[in-house]
Length: 456
Image (tube, rainbow, N blue to C red; front, side, top):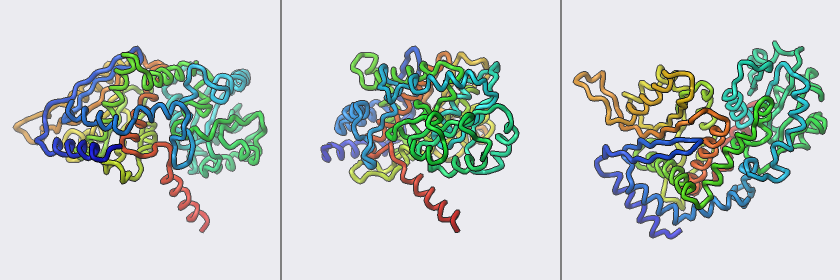
């Protein structure tokens, strides 16, 4: 990177930020068969976009994207590639072929006709599978799916204990198999777990054998697949028991091809990713909007914000790089089911003093006209110039930047496309900030401290 040119870009961005805030909004829309996007970005313009795009070129971000997809060591602190995207490749290698890896086991699970499938996991081993299962909710299913994070025994007693004695499949999902919460649940289950009613999904097959799991019960995945990116891997096995998981992988793979492609359609998609990454950094570093609310207005996506919270905050919650022109890294992400949120923290959004931006997700195909109206209405009100009134109590802030994401039919392929798009947003943001989105040393530090107190 040319330091003089980078400093020039920073100076220009600082100069723009000191101007009187404009009521103009950056307008950009994207539409494909799987996702529609509309920007309502106040105080962000083509001027800022052009400066960020120049920095994108200076930092050779497109080359970094190619490095990611070609399997180079993009996780520099741990000297690893990040290969989660290979599960969604058009022709995956045997190590990443979900159908070949999980197919025989899925067939066996279907034949056994389990009454309950209980997954023990935390972090990426919990949020991803849970999001998928809620998205695929089928009231006619004969299987009860449960997810247990641990380590509070009240959770175990409430969810698992009433089911013991029934025909259960216990799934232990842990990349390292050193996760205290999951190992605690394994201990509590005791002799109720056998080789016939349990499997373990892990990157640590040796550790699984040491814990007493038989070889046929071990489902491996590579060390190069990070926990928060593992939704594409066998970690999401439960989502494939009664559904065509291939559609999910195909949606993600299509997004990958667009991010690295050169077609007109690919260029439009790349502008979408740039718009998201550029504006996120702009609002955080120059507009004091260090918080972003993520709101989904479909019940089947009620845990979407939790998933995104981990994806973004573990990936972008890093110290700033002294070589970067930016001092702020990732934003604080919060959110939830939009209709519920409107009766809690929306008061702060509309009239409080805390600064934030917003992502809103909905589908016009959902069965609730009210939820759709709320999604569109809140998007309009948040991004407007504010509601003026002679009564101070009725005034609203407005000018909250809003990204509006629309899923046409709420299909599994659309969800795959959306989640891969979000990963691309995170990766490009990390490249511009010059940080590593694939390590998580802060999480490891917390685990170490907990062990010290546990051993007192």
